[in-house]
Length: 101
Image (cartoon, rainbow, N blue to C red):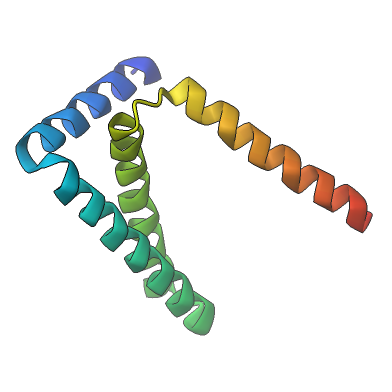
């Protein structure tokens, strides 16, 4: 399936959720999911087992969905977000170069 179609459908789902639950609830949900991701990272770092890996991937997916919701709330397109993301990668590349890596 065309990824653009999938992205459009995902955006529609996020918009429906925003309409039903509202911005405040979605901001709260994004905060909750970010906290759960942080906890899952810590758990994976301690255990490094199959279950903690599975839990971490699930929390990553939850946060990814909420990032899509946040982009809608902030009126940010995927393309605009990718520009900011690319800037972050450029900063990492620069730091790696300074470190000689």
